[in-house]
Image 1: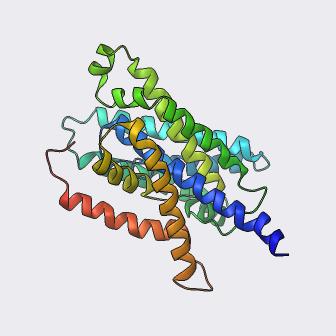
Image 2 (image 1 turned 135 degrees about the vertical axis):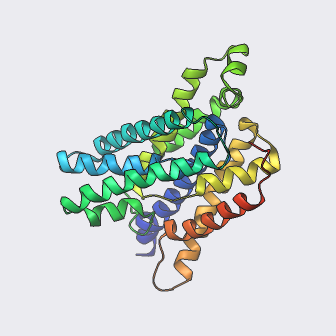
Length: 282
């Protein structure tokens, strides 16, 4: 019986934590490189909110759609939400370092409001809450395997890490280095959107993870994506594992969702960055 519990519940849950944590941290690193702002990650630019909107829409229109189809629709919405954020940022006359994430948070708030409205009128609020709160308590064998896709996306990000580093230095620098800036941006944003969609569909939203981990690693190792990406993945997995343990111990035998614990820690770190980050640093 103990071995059955281990193979059916404990091991899948641990693997899901490691895969989701590593992938979300890497997606945050890619987002910060491509947008050239330390304060952005999928949950602060509307990417995860757009993915949630896509899930609600596909559930309304095709409730019997397979999980893979829902994931693809969520990824398309996430990509569209990220593209909308970038368009708004480019229209800004002055790109203050603080204004960029604030615009992303406002855009995410609008998308979340639309999503909640649609879910309320279609009796999907309970389903929406399960997507918008990162929780690993329901992870079992047969319900997490889609997360192996994000491992492949992280591998692609590592292979193209040098190109992402160059793209993060601007379009002019990329062109001088012989890099197709738009193509690299498209690949990077597609990876971020797919990771966000897969994680939201499988375990829900884990906020601020992609903000905290890349900033800690960049202060230690610099902005070289190839050198920092493995450490970002390891620290992301470890931080989610720590949050999961805390969530299971704080109110034992009850369990606090990982998304709640990470939201509290990440919000504190975000405020610390706002107060301590030098104004001249991009």
